[in-house]
Amino acid sequence: MPAPQAMPPGEPGELGRAFNRMADEIERTSKALREHSLKFETIIQSSPLAMIQLDSHKQVTIWNRAAERLFGWSEAEALAHPLQTVPPEKQAEHSAILVALARGETLSNLATQRLRKDGSLVHVSASMSPIRDITGAITGYTAFIADNSHIKKAEDELLAANDRLSLSVATLEQRTGELTLLGEMGNLLQACTTPPEAHHVIAQAIAKIFPGMAGALYEIPPSRDRIEPVIGWNDGDTRAEAFTMDECWALRRGCAHRVDDCATGLICGHVAAAGDAARPYLCVPLIAQGEALGLLHLRCAPGAPALSQENQRLAETIAEQIAMALSNLKLREALRQQSIRDALTGLFNRRYMDATLSREIERARRHQAPVAVLMLDIDLFKHFNDTYGHRAGDLLLTALGQFLKTQIRLDDIACRYGGEEFTLILPGASQELAQQRAEEVRANVHALAVDFAGQRLGRVTLSLGVAVFPVHGASGQAVLDAADAALYRAKENGRDRVEIAVDPATSG
Image 1: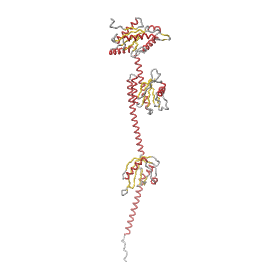
Image 2 (image 1 turned 180 degrees about the vertical axis):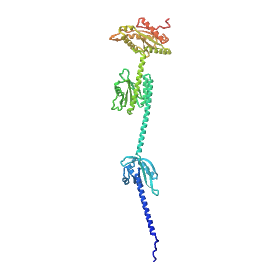
Image 3 (image 1 turned 90 degrees about the vertical axis):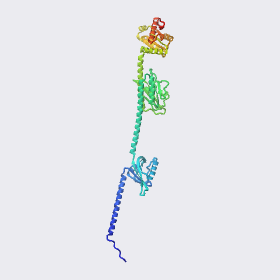
Image 4 (image 1 turned 90 degrees about the horizontal axis):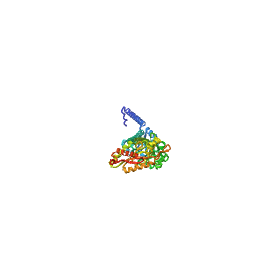
């Protein structure tokens, strides 16, 4: 039997060393893998982003601390059973995401909402991608999720601020438009010369400033025993009848009276009487220089909300401007009347008579029509003054002025010529008609009774002279002089009579 071959010298030692080197390499590799795994775990757990990994069965395999903080479930809970993190309204979106991941797509910065453990919603931004093995097959999915709540909150605040800014801009534009209309109304009111003109301007302006509201303007007459409607706008029908000032709470209190809820509000009597007590409204008194001049009434459309505080302040501003304009017109008219009226009798004065007579003569000349002038004088007026005193004489002049107002037509003009002389201008009156009218005045004045200091003044008689354009003169002054000459003939012929001016063509 052959002897066993001897092992080459040194082989066992080399094999051992190789084995040892292999073992060392395996140990180093294992250590490196553990260190790498530890580092990877540290990265995952320290990441500020919620990192979630699912396997192919949609089971959670990674759920880091950020995910715990974001959603409220612990890692143990997430790994133990499926979590309901998708809100019902996002289920369709979530299904579409899973389909896209299954196709191998990567989704970045997807803004959506997810549910927390306590049931609250959280706004998140997610980036998701599929996980593949060495063969390329999809074995799961990874998602990095960031809490987007602060961004969403900032966006919401920005949108809210933008909405507030848009509202402010719209409000500013509206207020600018209202102030423009208010300024236009003020300019137009300054140019108005009569109350009816001012009423028309006011109605047009307020209809534009408050387009959805009906309204009316009321004025208080000089008697101050009632308040009368003068104009309405936006279907704001004014009442056919006036009402007393006590029927409006705004006029009673001297400040605006607003009714928002007609079921519980204090309704003005004039509103209830007009059948508008079911609609919110605002009454603002028109007050200037401490005097109530009228009322601004605004009424909401059926079903519309009550006026806002801003609208009330605007209406009060408008009322102040209207009151000032009407007060100025009232003062202007009073000054005008003082300039053309005789203070004692209330009739037109000499200056107004001269201007009017010239105007009427020119009009008659164009239309080839007559104009009659009656000059009249109180007989024995000096006797009244001497007997009863000048105060009695003034009282007689005042009474005669009121009497003459009752004796003229709408187109006639009654004037105090001076002293106890008066003038009546009768446009369109012929000589025959003027003589008839003069006789009526002469006869009717006999019934004029004037009491002074408890006693009746003596019987009043008038002497009258009548002249007619163009028969007795070609100008106003010529006709006036002819009538005055006829008046003196009436006095010379016994007083209490009417004399006709002498026709120049027959006077020789």
